[in-house]
Structure formats: structure tokens, C-alpha cells
Image (cartoon, rainbow over all chains, first blue to last red; front, side, top):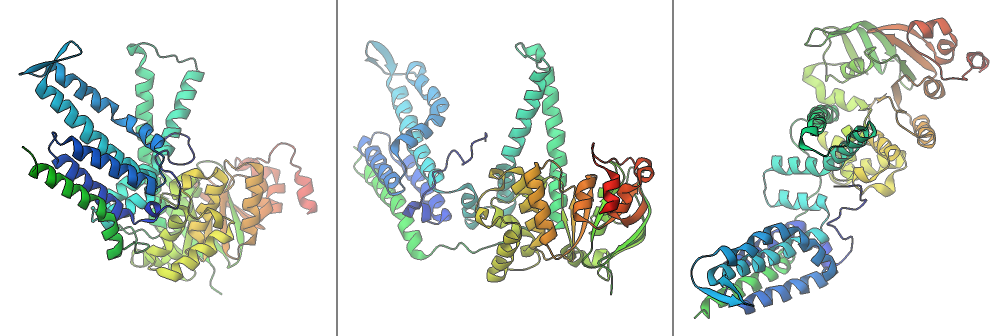
Length: 255
Length: 248
């Protein structure tokens, strides 16, 4: 969203990771996340290995770690919840810097922070090396229902248009002296939201009309075959295979 | 020779009972560029939607290069009639410019190299080849309008209908679009209330008001007729001299 010219999540480039097929990247990151989630939380070394592996993948994709760190900010609201766990948890307690904390809560918090961060980092790397249009095609290749992919595509396409409309309506409102500070002044904002809904609905009708005028008969045409070769799949599945191995080992060596 | 577009006695009322067209008739020959002039609410857009069967007339008929508009060959009608809508954001909905231009011909069944050639040719015709891989919302308004024209050109229509092509364009984009339109070898029906633009691009004009055609003739003559313009809520911009039109 916003007026930015490139998509904020995407870093243009030509690295091997940029050239990899989107469906491979999506599947690999999903499997990687599954392996991470399945890892026992006591195996600190395993999470260290995952982090190193992800850093390696980011380097292959020429994604600077500072960029990745900034993308991780999105998980902060979820982490807030984890921060409370050691304080509200029941059972055995330990003193950390003089503050009593629940041991179970600490483990719970660590579990959320470690697995959440690795998961967000993996998807941020995929997003940084894959344009939105390709992500959509990748999802389609992975047999996600076409209707869902089409809806997602429309959402991406029209988010900017609608955000622009919101901006114009807001400027028009404040230009007429509207200065909402209190909840009872929200009426104008609510009315704008209603107008926006109607306008978007009408735009939907016009878009459909324009599509029908170009021969649309209910199904989006499949334009090019983005099939991945076996070698591409093998390369992409290296990371989740390694993660699965680590997770299995972590369970195996568990005391 | 069969005309590119024949409209005979077309009348149409919307489902809410509002009668928008009252027996409209005209014909456009192949290769002609015709302006359809009229004030807001004259029924211009309603008429345009009859031409590709999005709306079906309550009475009368529309024939496109010999093929009557009817449910059984809507697909072919929509290939023959290309409509460029007023708001390019309504027309461009695919993730990239090239995919959007490919949407129409792909619906016609084109694939592979043939499809690619069509897309390239259409983008070249509007001077947008180098933007093929970009998402439409990263383009300027004028560029989006040009891509919207390309999306329709890619279907190789027999008649190109432009709905208010000059609206919201800055003077440079307006001139660029005019150059593109005059360079196209296709029959054009241009719906507008931008009278100087109609004069610049279309030798012939139809005037429409309250759902009926009220005049049909050379654009310069119609625009020089102050009474006719006034009767149809049309006005030349300030400083535009009708006498200079006669001299042309």
C-alpha cells in the first residue's frame, strides 16, 4: 500500500533466488516453517542452525540482513503476547534479575519468539526475492483454488487504487475543516467508509464490464507455463530437507 | 461494402424503467473516424454498451461488420468491437501490463508465440513496449490510458470505441494519445464532450442528446453551428472561434 513506487516487500535483483520458480520458493518456505515448528523447544542448537541456514539463503538472494531485520518488525505485536507469558504463567518460578518468572512461561515465550522469528524471516526472504505477480502464479501452480488466487490478485491490484481514494476523501474532509479528535466526531469518517464501500462496489461492476468486453467468460486464461524442472525442485527443497533432518535429530538426542 | 457498425432503431430502457435510448440509427463505414458528441447523461455510454452486447437493445438491432449482435456469437462480437473505457483503472486489473494486454487475445484462445507477437505489436502501437513488465498502478495516468488502448488493440478489433479518451489527461498526454489514434488504421468511434479533440481527430461527428441522434455531419460544420450546439448542451471552450473552423 502507500504511494511507494516499488512494492515495499520486494527487492529487485537477479540472484539465483530471484530466478527460482515461485512455487518452489513458497513450498520450500512452508516446509521449512513446518520443520521449525516441529522442533523441540529445548534444542537451542537446532534454532541456531536454522538461523544460520536462513542467513545463508538471504546471502544467496542478496537480501541484506538489515533489510530482513526491518521486515521482522511486523511480528512485534505477536511478541508482546509472548513477553507476558513468564509473568502470568503458573507453576515453578525462577528469579531473573530479581524478578520472579514462571519457568513454563519462559519456555513458552522462547518457543514463540524463536519459531515466530524464523518463520517471519523465511517468508520475508521469499517476499523480498519474488514479485507479487509471481507469488500469485506460484500459488496457482501449487493448486490453490483459482478463484482464491484471482481474488488475491484483484486485492493486490486495487489496494493502491482504494488507498488513493481513501487519501483523497480524507484530504477533502479536512479541507472542509473536519478535525476529528473525539469519538463522537467519527460520524464523517464512518460516512466516508460507507461511500468508499459503494464506490468500490461500483468499480467492481465496471471492472467486470471491461473484462466481459474483452471476452471474459468466467475463467482467467492461463498465459504461460511456469513449470519447474526436477533440478529446480531439488535445489529448493535442500533447505527444508536440512531443517527436517535437524528437527529429527533434535528429537532423537532429546534427554 | 458492409459498414463497420450499423445501428438501426435501437431503443433501450434500464431495468429500473429509465429509458436511455429512443430509436438510435446511424452507420459507420470501415476506416472512418467518427466522434459521438453529447452532454452528460445523453445516453452515449449506454449506446456504446449496445455495440458489444453487454446491454441488449429492447428494440432495433446492431450489426458489426455484417454480424448482428446476438447472444449466440457474443464472443466474436467482442473481438470485433473493442471498447476503451473511461477509467483505465477499471480496465487494467492484471498484475503486469503485458499480462493485461494478453488477457483479451488469450480469451480468444491465442497462446504462445502468437500471443506474444500480439502483445508486443499492441504495446508498440501505443509506445509502451518498455513498460511491459511493470504493474499498471506504477504508471502515470496518461500511460495507463495508452495501455488501456493497447489491451483492446491486441484483440485486433474491426472497430475501436474510445469512451472519453481525453478526460483527465494533461495537454502533453492528450497530444500523444491523439498522435497514437491518428496513426491507427482501424475504424474509430470516439465518445466525448471534448469538442476540440473531436475536431482534431474525427472528420465526422454524431450529436446525441436525450437518447437520440440529433445531428450527423462533418465535425467542423457541426461545431460552427452555434444554435445546434446550444440546443444540445454542447459548448466550445472559451476563446475557440467557430469562424476559424469554417476556414479549415
